[in-house]
Length: 187
Image (tube, rainbow, N blue to C red; front, top):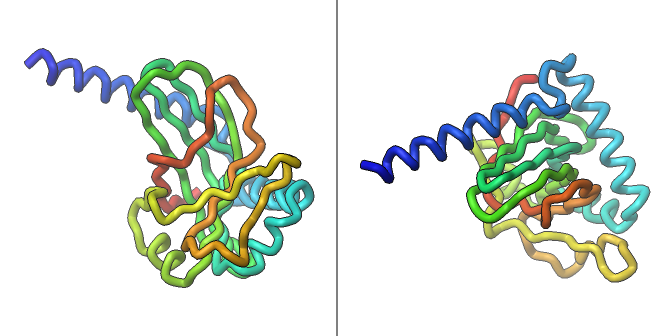
């Protein structure tokens, strides 16, 4: 019985943490789509300007999910939240939120941006059909090489989804999309 009570307290604390994080400068209460679209455009401009290899990745993709700002924080129990848009052929077709929860040895907070490049029609269709898509084994991460350029192996990658994480700022070690759940929203 004691374990059930602890579990309930932990889940309640995690839910409270996620609710609190939702209030942190991620566009909640903002004028909606216009703000998200402006942030998405600025994020893509930054990505393409600073990491030119991603333009080739974008040109070969069937869709791009852009999350301009994800805020994560944790003190034993952690969570994260952000909002962004799915673009197909350069036009926004849907808006999404990204949420993440975690329990473990962690302390701190950070913010980062990420972009998911859907490389196949099947991967994009699966994402759009899902009521809550979670980043999993079908995601391949595109990393910075020693020259601090993002290396996109677009000629050899066979992953259905490629993820680029960039712009990390804060004091929480590592940015990962593991456990990140994406849900379609109406801003």
